[in-house]
Length: 465
Image 1: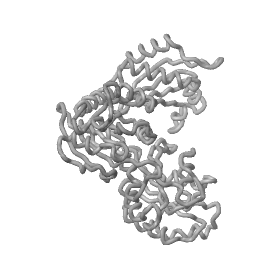
Image 2 (image 1 turned 180 degrees about the vertical axis):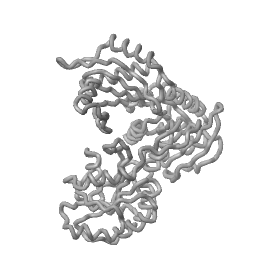
Image 3 (image 1 turned 60 degrees about the vertical axis):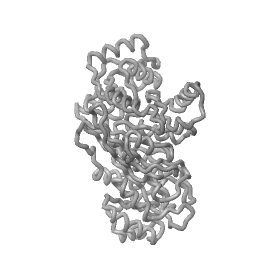
Image 4 (image 1 turned 90 degrees about the horizontal axis):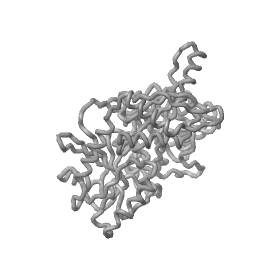
C-alpha cells in the first residue's frame, strides 16, 4: 500500500517578529496565543493547513529563538538544527520595521546549512518602508516575501511559493510491512513497551523523562507479518519545554505519525485525564491513522478487582471523540497484554484494507435512510441516493451522493458513521464520509458549460472522521 507523507512547514525566527500572528493568518483561524510580549509561545503549536490546490501540510509555530542564557535556555543553534531535521520547508521570519540583527544573521546562516527549502518572510511590512524591506535581501534567502499578518499582505505570493515547493504526494515504496508508532508524553513507558514488543533491548530505558531524542526503529515478525516499531520522543505539556532540542519533539512525532499505519497512544495508569493525551489522539485521528489507547504501568497501579471496570468508562469519556479506538491495559514489566497489542494491530490493518462492493453499500444506505430518514429544513429535505467506496485511499473513505446534503445535520452524519462501523466493524481506524451534492454539480456544469475546475469540488463536500 502506498502512503502519502504530509510535508512539514516550520515558522522560525527570533522573538516578537509576528510568527504566531502569521501562523493564525495562514490557517485562517486563531490557534496560537498572540501578544506583544516576547516569548508568548513557549512550545510548538501544530495544525494541518491546506493550499487552494488541495495540497496539505503541517504548519508549526515555534517559540522565539533566544540566547542560551535566557530563562528557557533555548539556543538558536539547537532550534534551527532541530527544525532542519524535522521540517521540509522553513519560513525564516524577520521584523520588517527593524534593522537586521545579529540573531537574524545567525538564523539565516544556520538555515542555509540545513539544506532545506527556505522562504524569507519580512513581516509587519504594513508598518515598514520599502527600503527597510529591501535591506533584508542582504540575508541572501530567496524568495523574499513582504508579509503583514494583520492585513493579509503577501499571502498570495506565499501560497504561490509553497505551491511550487510542496509536493502533492511523497510516495513511499509499497510494501507489506506494518509500521507501528509509539506515542505519548515523556516517561509514560514508551521505550519500555518498545523493548517488550521487540523482545530485546533496542532503546535506552530510564526513569528520567526525555531519554529518547530521536525515533528508534526495529523490525520484528509476528504471524508471518513484518512490523516496524517506531519509538518517539515524548511530547511535553505547554510551558514544560526546557531546552531547544525538546522544542521539536512534536515534529519528530508528526513524522512518526505520518509514516505509521497504526499508532499506540500510551497513557500513564497513574495519571489519567491529561489534556495533552487527548491532543495527541486528535493529531493521530487528523492524520487518518489507526489508533490503540494503551494504559501503561498497570503493574504499579494501586487497584483491586474492580479498578479496570471503573477506569474504562472514565477513559472512554475523556476520548469520546474517538469511540472507535480500542483500549488495552498493559505492563511492560510483567508482559501483560503485550502480545494482544500485535493481535489488535493485525485486526485494525485488516479492517482498514477491507473492500466493500458498491451493491452492498447501497443496500446498506437504503436500509439506513428508510429506517431513519435524514431530517432537514422546510423545502430543504436532504436525500441520499448513491454510495461508493473511494479507491486508493489508505483510510476507509466513502462518497455519498444526494441532494441538499449541506442541510444534513452533523448528528445524522455521526449516526451514519456509527451504523457503518456496526455493519463492517471498523475497529481502531478513522472513517471518512464525503457527502456530495449532485444538484450543485449539475448547476456548476450548466453554468460553466461542463468545464471542470480543480478547487470547486472540495467546497461542496463535507467530511466526517
